[in-house]
Length: 430
Ligand code: HGY
Ligand code: MN
Ligand code: MN
Image (tube, rainbow, N blue to C red; front, side, top):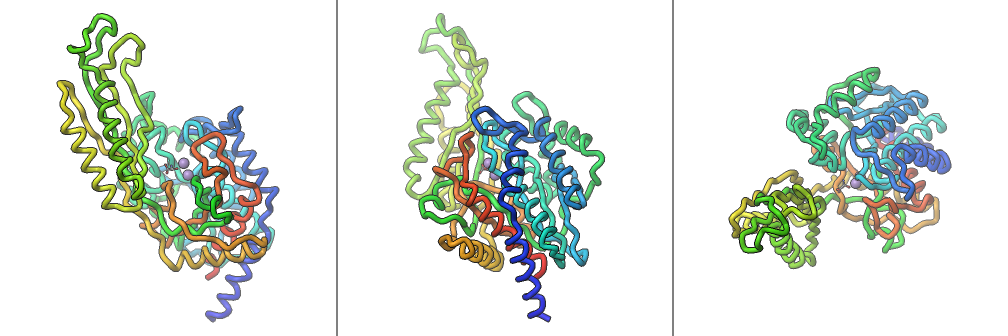
């Protein structure tokens, strides 16, 4: 019995892998990139904007054309299911299609489209998997329009998160709840499904978004885990006043206060950089943001990441101390926004992914895959709490992402899709 099942898994995996069509994948990437496409080659498709909803509709129609059953849950996560021989918990793959304000055409989208390519490859290979195979499009992975990130996947795993997420607002004071209800209305024709469905496993294919694979000259990465991440907002409240008439010594300048705290944070981060800490002060909101008014309110965000949780805890303590101890007559507040401990994927899943990447690389005459951890966070970090989870990476040119110039050699994109096909088809028959 075991042997027959193993042979079935091997045949399904190799059939799926060998039927991945690189030109079909190239076309699919170009079609999706048109939703929010920019003149500089990038994509602007922030979560639950009209353009994101149009892109989602495009994916629903494509999945239906492939014979998939489509479903949506209360977080507007979309699921495209290819039935299996038995109605067992499915093997899930996929990622997200929302982007940064100025993003690339691959971050997230590549994982969803490689999942749909897998469905086509299984159809072409006439493979019948034991379990269903599902492709997911998670809601709001980026967390840029509405914070925190990974709202859809974390709510899928723990639905109790959703009410709190609904109160998040974007820069125009639109709430995530309103945007979500609008998205669900637009998808009222798609059958609704409960969250927290049982899953046999989850495998996410993603671009690395960093320099490791490119520097190693290796096209496939077996992702062993994801580093820890914490987000904060620091807000200074002073007094808006006239830039020309207000003497320097009487000002309550919120910008001057934030710059001082920011400088000390940069020094703190520089001291810990060799230990792997990465800190970004990425978003500044200045009020009233006028050239000739002293800023009365300034808020900036802190994104801090590290694989070493203790080191991140020390940074957290230093940040809290800096904000609490900042000596000025105005107000300085710190608001934690998001925190996720490091993720480590189980060895059994790493073995399946390594096997898939090995065969893909060998068949293409390429170097064997290497293990690496992810500097970026991904939906897989929440799915890892729910079912056996793993990730596959392909290289990013110049290690660049969250930038319109984000790019990966098409040959590598195809190799990644082949490795994903092998891993998911294997798991769906094993
Ligand atoms: O920020 C991240 O790591 C992810 O790319 N959203
Ligand atoms: Mn991503
Ligand atoms: Mn991203």
